[in-house]
Image (cartoon, rainbow over all chains, first blue to last red; front, top):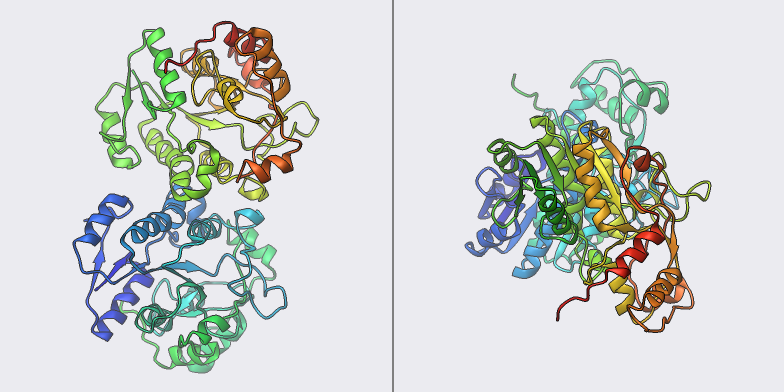
Amino acid sequence: MIVVLGGRGYVGQAIQSELQRRGLAFEVFSRARLDYTQPHLLSAALRALPVRFLINAAGYTGRPNVDACERAKAECLAGNAVLPGVVAEVCSDLKLLWGHVSSGCIYSGAGPDGRGFTELDAPNFSFRQNNCSFYSGCKALGEEVLAGRENCFVWRLRIPFNHQDGPRNYLSKLLRYSRLLEATNSISHLGECVAAFVDCWQHHVAPGIYNLTNPGSVTTRQVFQAISDSGVSDRKASFFESEQQFMSVAAVAPRSNCVLDVTKALQAGLQLRPVEEAIADALRNWQWEKR
Amino acid sequence: MIVVLGGRGYVGQAIQSELQRRGLAFEVFSRARLDYTQPHLLSAALRALPVRFLINAAGYTGRPNVDACERAKAECLAGNAVLPGVVAEVCSDLKLLWGHVSSGCIYSGAGPDGRGFTELDAPNFSFRQNNCSFYSGCKALGEEVLAGRENCFVWRLRIPFNHQDGPRNYLSKLLRYSRLLEATNSISHLGECVAAFVDCWQHHVAPGIYNLTNPGSVTTRQVFQAISDSGVSDRKASFFESEQQFMSVAAVAPRSNCVLDVTKALQAGLQLRPVEEAIADALRNWQWEKR
């Protein structure tokens, strides 16, 4: 069976749906019932089950957005940098294969050759570069804590979206924010990412770091245009004049905008559609949130 | 009464001795009996006592030395960066004055004017400068987590020593290491530091950051010469040829060597003797560890 940590979050719920869809046995560990941040408790709970794979989707992302992490630094560090190390230690002892949901938000820009950062590029939006949000700093530290672990996948998502309207869906955010920031990004179709997590286990993919964004990149204007073209909304877009204006008016912490190279994931057989196709498909199947 | 977290460590035991010497009521919270890393448990335990002041001497320093932190990153982050934030939050809720034992090892060098770093200088040996040991990075993050807290002392010690031989005493280390690294440092007489902690509370010192090293600085050769002059040991010193040689032969993580300015602590009335005097006094009263 598969154990999921952080099953209540946006990514965690999608993982549960995917495991149900595939008919795979799984259990979600909930912190309310089991404090899995304590190594001995996590270890004992895992020993009591026939666990074959573990997915750590727990983390502190901040609500309503990443700025909240600037005011909850200890929680952000605990959830994003310490917990991965705890899980790694426990899984290492139990010789259990596992995967960690990391973030591509540890990069800024389009990479050394302009074609996106690969898994070999060191994070450049991190505490060590002294240019990041506290959230990104903690996610990068979490990867540092995991460096050299052999039985571990590190999956880097960015700006998840799918066809279901909701407060964590990037497409919904574009539909709801009063003003938008123009930027170029690689983004992640949530359903494809969680399918890739399970494929990593079922298809015996080699452990390691994987960028899991849809191939390519999009600008905010392109995504908004796709929304208009799809008929999901006829809202007109209003954009900040500049990142400076955005930072002074709407944001506390600097935001990561970046392009990732996903060649490694594609070569490993993971299924990620070109980003334009994944966006169009999500909009074609759009479901408004019930209110 | 006073509550001490981390009472079993080198600094924690000295705090207990000082509180006993002054006849002050105190209780040491031990993690074996109370997991004070959990905010609700710490809060409940504090509410049950007439606490007036709390000292957080808990932290992860690595054994036998700071290099161990490079292999225990999650523990190092949890103990040195997350825990201070947990204590801050709980003490803030309870309106309880408290102090955090931090480290001067978040600096490198002698400061912008060569007279030592003051509390206003930003750490320059940290993750944000990307030049530090994992330990120093975590201690600097811990201070970042505490930034802006109003009811909190942050006490920065460096390389503690006193008259009692032991594995954590800097003078003992110089007596035991086979080769030494020549460097210039501000260092802390442990007894004076823990007296300063208690004075901060008893004398109503204004909360904030305080460098707590003995005024001045010393080179490794000067300290070794003082040991020879004192008659405590007639051992001859052997030195590494360079920091490069030290790093390649004896160390994993880069070491902080730095000079601190303690004007703020002295002006607040805290008692710190000139470093040469404190060293000479420790050697005059030297007590070998019983074996």
